[in-house]
Image (tube, rainbow, N blue to C red; front, side, top):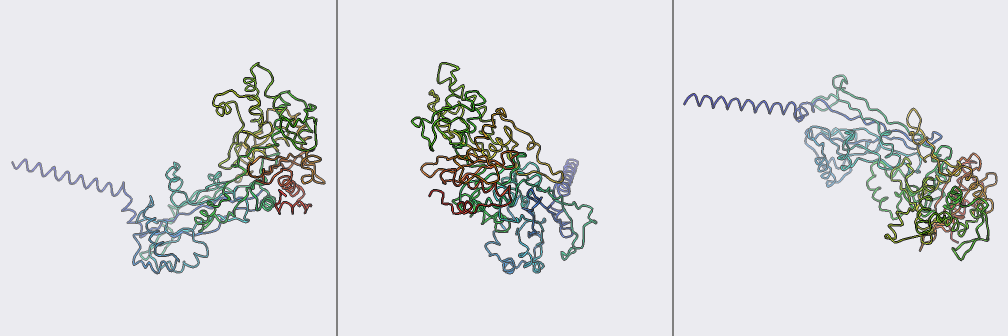
Length: 604
């Protein structure tokens, strides 16, 4: 009997000892809570946030830089005799805001009573100067220095994008482990696309404190400190003076301007109208300003050069001409009578050759060209014949960069639409279709959709006589000063270079004596362009113009869309020619054209 009791007692002692060992292992190895409690009074860990990379224009002019701001962190276990009324008075917040901040802090995933936790963020230099002499009144509260984005000029907002605190959803999806709650991240534009290059790498410093919380130097002589690594600077292809002038011209209008250097694909100017001041989405008032901007009925956050999808209008006739020449269904000398009983047209012309048809933007001519392209008589069935022709047409049109994303170094680019047999099969629900059902695509209407960046790239492709570089904003990253490799590759169309000279001749004729003569022609520069008027019923048409200059060794290619502005030879051609003049000559010499654009009365 006694032996049995003795064994039971021994088992109990072993179990109790095992439980103590498990608890001790949990405390010392698996849990940081007690280590944090032991160290928190002596050592204060401070994050050293990196400087985000600068952004400059092609001439080295600074566009985006960093300015200091300050966060207030709190270690809740150290807060003693907290005077909430005095705190609200010093930091100029209400008691309701104070309660909300405590609630939000405790809801953070990484919250610990024994570690610094973000309490108030984004104090400006002025705010910090006001509160710093009072921080000693609130034990447990500490300053954390960091930086925010600032802008030298209120321009380029849609291209630059903005930086803000990483969201909870995005943080949960982040598999890299790089980001923590409270970190800033690029949310759109260049800031988002080049986040990896711009962000840098955070460091950590451990400060030794006495019992009163006063810093006494580095812990263990800085043995555990790590330095932050600044982000890489970006050199863009943007000409800041040209960009500001473009925004000046687009002020009060809806639309876009995209200017490209054909020889490199570097974007010289990218304007979305209406736009906003990028400074509004930086600093303490970010949240309230974002709500105001994002709910604006004019949609200033909508990046039209990349996201607006329009019918291309008459500009598309150049692509039609190149395709037909390549397929051998016409020659530059082919004449097609302007039969307006087939499709409506405009202007005084009748029986033009290809160059004349482009210069006068003849609709019946290109109706006839597409018919020849799609109905070659390869099979006796007109429905199958159209299908075969459209597949060939698709191949050539897509080689210009239409119908898919080009791959610009900005997020949210749209691809537009090049109609295919599969599309018409869906639209007609399996019923047969032929040329007479789809002929509106001949003049850039119907199911065609393009994005402004694609039209600027199209102008650059013609300027290069058959190839393009993917348009890109950043021409140099970091010390190496090189763009991403894909932006140095040539992309060739399926069209022989010889046929592009026909397009160049015709586009010069458009400006010298065609639909854009009055507002696009420049005295000392040969400009090659094409007008477009895009249907927008029941509202007025959109005005469109593409161009490049000079004719030989082109330095700039451009597309301009002005919504609800009528004929392309008015608003769009005027803006494009002023941009060309500004870039190539450094100034504009036609005050009447500039005044016409600024007044914006294009429908009179």
